[in-house]
Length: 401
Image 1 (cartoon, one colour):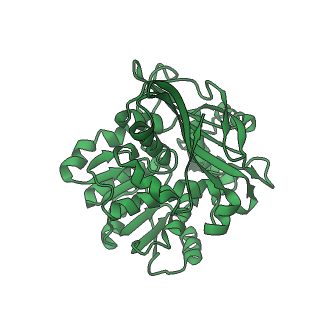
Image 2 (tube, rainbow, N blue to C red):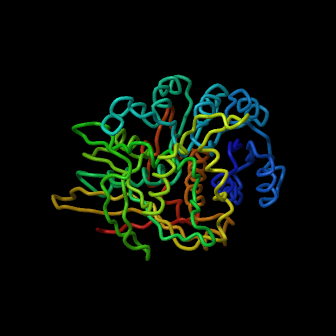
Image 3 (cartoon, rainbow, N blue to C red):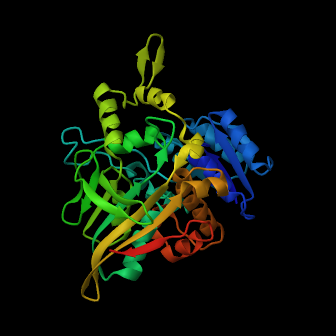
């Protein structure tokens, strides 16, 4: 398989590192706007012929198409901020290759009722084009990271094997990771974090469909496994709520994330000052997006691994009935940062996201996952995916609640 990897940040590097031992991965083209970053990652990986580098502007569809044709690419892997999803997605369609991402096209809040009704939903742009992809016989596998991605696979597994009837599927994400040496240092893209945390969170209910709530709503305490313990989690906008109901029969879907009081406070302050704005403004003689300035002021998550200590947990909490009895389970994956650094030289949050994409490549390359159109992870056999998790160094767990 020949892959064009668009974006070589923390997750992109982890994808390449996890893919490197797989002999069926013939070529991964490392492409990024920051060519020095490509060179840095290529040097870590070795094998420059197998991991060539290219400069790319992910906002220019014609450039993406040209690189895909130059390297005879089978799959375009989108590892960029989701603001670039549309040109990357459309480029794959025009070239005629498989597309994969870990976060779907962006939402736009409802103009009159942002905290009640949905405007443009995550992934709407992609799902509106599903018929075109079907007619062309192409596959766009959207939302295959950890959340969305692995968590969606778990939802499908719960439906197929663990429950007769599902009341609620709740994605729950928490960690006890500490980043030493910084007062504030997000361990994932701050650009993406601002987007998903300050947008109105989406909830799905069978009777109401998709609707929104205020950011950080419905706080609850959730006890995470493997020593992480109790963490307060709150509603956050996330793709699982838009994906799961399309393929899994249930009555309610939510996503809640453990942010912590400090993180929520910082995000609220950024919003109050307008520093979360992604539209460019004029500063003296320069046009710049405030959110890009915030990202530039913070440490790069890709280089925080040696300062991070602790574990991160991603998983799917399912409530329903089996054989007439109430049942609750939490299907999860815990990644220890020190272990991830030792194995792949990548910090745990990005590694936990990246391995799912490589498993997806594996299943597609060997014909175990097949499909056409725009499909989420729930559309495929979950057992095939979950069997490979331990082989990739990321075993899952199931906890009866």
